[in-house]
Every structure is written in structure tokens, then in C-alpha cells.
Length: 344
Image (cartoon, rainbow, N blue to C red; front, side, top):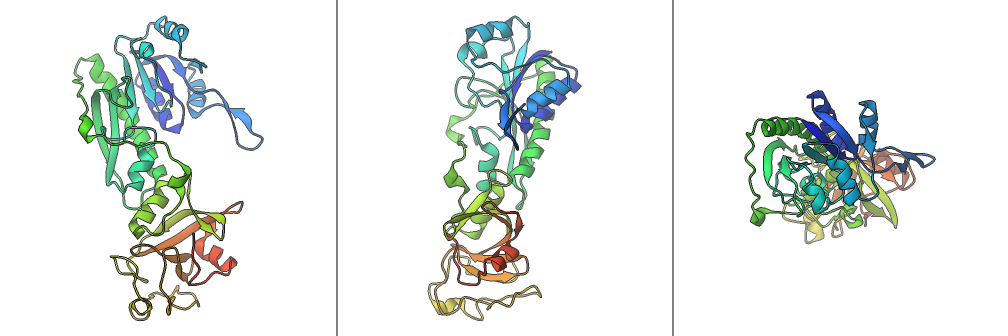
């Protein structure tokens, strides 16, 4: 099939490569213009442009998707367009430019998580599975008829980066399946149930900050949901500290699952305990005072136990503003923190 491809980030590269490998004719690759990146801020091509040039494909990055550009695409004589993470709304006339229309590779099980950040939102929400849906593009945001769908499990410690890579490969294969079924006339587009739709808007700065009053599992989901980009953070005496990794654990310190203790006595020995040989020399508990969300409970080896709204979250790897990545334990000892210190 003769195609036009639209895409920009890493996520779209396996799909472009799969289209070429499967023998389809890519008449043009459309991507975002080169942008400043890295040291020196020199203009760098998008990952899709790099892949297209490596594959010997023609590339364009139009400033406007206007009528002149639509006519240019029509003159290429293509049958369909493929979109994978392009990041721009296509105008109605462009949507109708080809006989087989435009196929979108969307990183969710539609109609759930329509929008710009479906992978991040699914991990932050603690979803146990997500997937890829190929769909016919329409004027509405990710509202087009669905073509094929495949799911993938999200493990309890999986990060957005890991899910992203799995979905990128899954999407490449599913797009090739979709094109084959389209050529053979086997596709039966299915309308989405709008009543079941949820939305995954672009991330904001507020999405990155850990809310220590939330349960430990929600804190864990936010940290892994923001990994590797943009990174979750907390505040240490007015300064940002990125949280790169952490974990839930069932041994060692424990808090009542329904919330923080209401009185000092509830959090003293023996309701709080530490097991294992990695315990630091710090006191075992912040006894004698009420424990607040965000408060350090223990520094044990490379990890730091922090109280949440329900349970304990263990920080493993952090990066202070302008600093290097280090273990949470090394950070806390360097800052001379101890039990009772509270993150914002």
C-alpha cells in the first residue's frame, strides 16, 4: 500500500520501521521541525526524522497543514495515511484526503484514556493493563471508529518508560496487521462507546509533585508514572528533589493501612518495627509525637522510609536540584536528615 506517515517521538519509530519492513511504500514522512536539544542547544531532528533519513525516505515538516499542503499530499497518489504520536490536530479536509483515510496508532484501550498522555495517566492511576488501539481518525479527539486492539499487562513496579517501550513495539505490529486486514477488506470498524470514555490530558507541573497525604500505593504509582519523564518530585526545605525510584515493601516498618496513627502512642514500639540488618543508627521511630505525611520514619541503608496518608513509602533513588542521581539513603545522610524530618 502507498502511504503517508506522520509521527515525531521515539514511540512512532518502530511503527515507521515496521511499515517499511512489511513492504509498504512510504511516499512521505511528515514530522515536527528540528528543535534545539542537548548541550549547545543545536537544532536536532526528531527521532522519526532520524529514522526516515536512515531508511532513505523523503521528509517534510510543514509549518501549516493548509489547503496547499493537502493538495500536495493528494498529488502523491497515496491510499492511506498513518499517524503515530504526531501531536497536531488534522483539519477536516486533510482527514478526507485519501481513499482509505488516516489510521491512528493510539496508546490506550479506547475509549479509555483519550488524549495526549495515555501512558502516564494509566500508570499513575494504577491500571493493571493498557494497550494499543488502531482507529480511523475523525475530527473529535481520539473519537474515531476502532479497527484493532491489543492489550498488555502493567506490572506493579513498571514505569511509564517500560510501558512506553512495550506499547511502541506492540503498536508497530498491530499497525501492520491493520494494514493487511484493510487491503484484504477484513476490517470492521467499531464505534466507540462515548459513555465509557475517559481522558488523559497533557501533564502539568502539579502532576509531578508527590502528595504525601495519599496512600503509599498512590505515591508509588505517581513516582513510577513520572519515570523517566518528567520525574516526580517532593520539596526539601523549599528546594526540589526528584524522586526517581521507590518501592512498597511488606517487611520492616509498617503503618495502619487505614491511615496514620491518631496519637503518639499508636506509633511507638511495638506498633512500629524494623527488621533486617540494613537498619541505620537512627532511632527506630519518631516516637513521642504524631507522625505526619511526608515525615521520615527511618533511614535504612540506601533507602528512606517516609510516612504517607496510609502506609510507608520507601525512597530508593533521588536527584536534588542541580545535583547528581544518588541513593535516597546517601542523600538523607548528606543532608543530615533523620526521623522526624518532613518533606513538603
